[in-house]
Length: 113
Image (tube, rainbow, N blue to C red):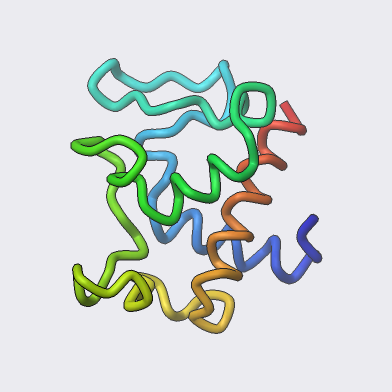
């Protein structure tokens, strides 16, 4: 559960990352077939929290070739500890907090639809 100030920052980050360019937040939203990614309104009933976290952190590990970009790439491909964030202006640039906030927000979207 996000505190109100964390939720506000998570929503800003969600917008900054342009997540809704590909993801729907409700079945009422319409995107073209070429734009479709999983509907986030269904996340809590279709996905496990740990899977969502792993996906957000590194989608290419879960599904090589996916169109989902990595927002937390490795600075050094040989060093798994070298992960960096593409949005350091949010949540103190802390990758764990950013991923946790995006997971919580995704589950919140799902719970409220």
